[in-house]
Image (cartoon, rainbow, N blue to C red; front, side, top):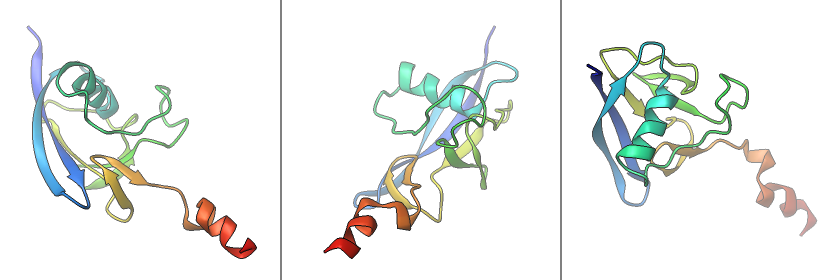
Length: 117
């Protein structure tokens, strides 16, 4: 029998406000938080917004989130039988759900084009 764990995920945007939704996810020893988020998108709610680029732990650094109050990569954070609380990065602008604007300010297109005007 498969064990189920609860993943509490912060959802929403800056404009609409945020809320926490709980998802029951099948647990497999050694699975990552990213594995659980991908399971949610595939099986429970395809509208969940997450950012990732790889499935190879810590190669792209796109999946930065807060897990149980600590900044980490979803692909390297291991899920436990206690479940987890997953939130967007606190210090970044929220786009939607777990997606934040992670691009450094000096690398935004508007910052590059501003001196040319």
